[in-house]
Length: 329
Image (tube, rainbow, N blue to C red; front, side):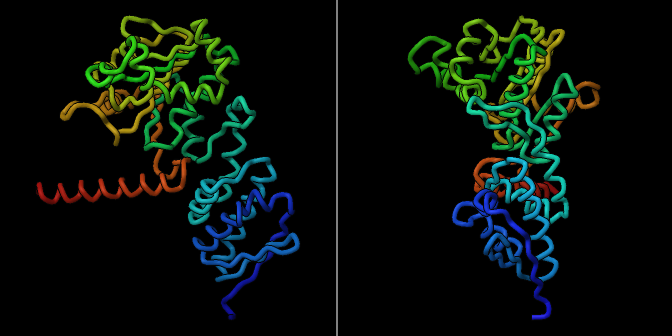
């Protein structure tokens, strides 16, 4: 028993539900990950376990409590990410993340970076005219870009928001859908609509759409245009060809800001077709004013299972790449 340490944290009752989680779900995750025992009683939280692990758990819980006192909702994703930082002894960096509020949703919920990678991404958008944000699904690439666009629009930094995607399925597959071309491509652009509905509200979004201040369109619609004084987001850029990417980037006019998002691991291009996103990364990486932010599985902010799925696929692809290299050798 000599190697068992006990530590106490005073825990205000009003923060217990937020930090502990429903049915103490967050505490169970911490106990399992750090191999400690947590006991809550009379406004005190007791931590029992090996000295090093107790110290980690104490630092982690103190940071989560401080975050709760700053008015943040503590989710399972927050706990898992905080645990990852604690294992690297970087838990103090948590306070740098949640203080950066980009804007609020129509319900009043704050939109902010939730990981250090996301914070770097947001800072890069503020500093650069063009930013390439790449990474797996669920890392907030498009949603954070949308929030930055709405913030710039509301503060009159830009006069228009333009959202676009390469509608690579606008041919045979969508041709069987009823309606005109806009009706055919609308389902493909639906994720962009959904994000704007949440941030701006359907009425405000529709009103600005009718005025032409917000435009959601396939990438093909950008050809021949010059886009001045606009916040432009190109989503799913891994599905562009090099020619499409060049066409898009050369549309940019004065007073505009451009965000290009994509996931290089989810290309829907025909076999053998080079992605315009990959080429742009090689061609433009040394140009001042263009930023490149690579988000990773650690920045996934969807259900914790998504993070595990992303990591499993990354490991699988890495093993296949290594095996292929050995066969070629």
